[in-house]
Amino acid sequence: MKKLFLGTMALVLAAMTPLRAAESVRGDYVEVRTNQVYA
Amino acid sequence: MKLDGLKVAAAVFGVENLGAFPNSARRSILYLDSKATAEQRSALVAAMSQQYRSILGTVSAVRTSPIDFAMALDGASVRVGELLALDAQKVVQVQVFFDGVFPAGEASRAGGVTKRLVHPELAVDEELAYTPFIPLTSYALGRAVRFDNTDATLGSTWSDSRPRMSVFTGTFAF
Image (cartoon, rainbow over all chains, first blue to last red):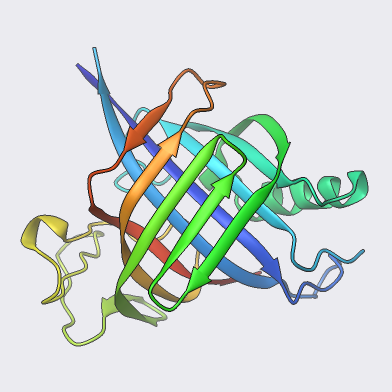
């Protein structure tokens, strides 16, 4: 038996400034994880 | 280029525990907001790959899909088309310090490199021995009540409806 470990992350980009050096990005985030056993 | 309000999701697959072995090999699928233009999608892939390279591992596929992401005081909900679904209930607000993470109300830390989150509202078997995938400026622990993936691109689908303490919600920045 082996286990497969699974994770999902989702991000929403808010108050996003142009993607250039020294400019910051921030936003909301959620993640969840699980595992799955398989033969 | 403005990217306000666009959404990105990722599904990460590993054969080792993603929390216990944060640098272990893994593969991922990136899902980009279907509201994004081609130029915006390129910028999103570049930003994700640059910021979260070790979390994502090998990005095996990039998809475009409608993404709904709702965050509320009592939980969060994510839908990536018909492929991914997550419903979570917020349980514990967590205070974040520069050298670790501790739940509000009761601080506890296990030995070694593991930071174990302990809180009176958590059952013993709900204690978490890992921290969020990415650095967060503030976050809460939550209980997943639905977590489904029907995208078989990487050979595995799942449907997990056991209520489990396995969710972080919060705010990221880079």
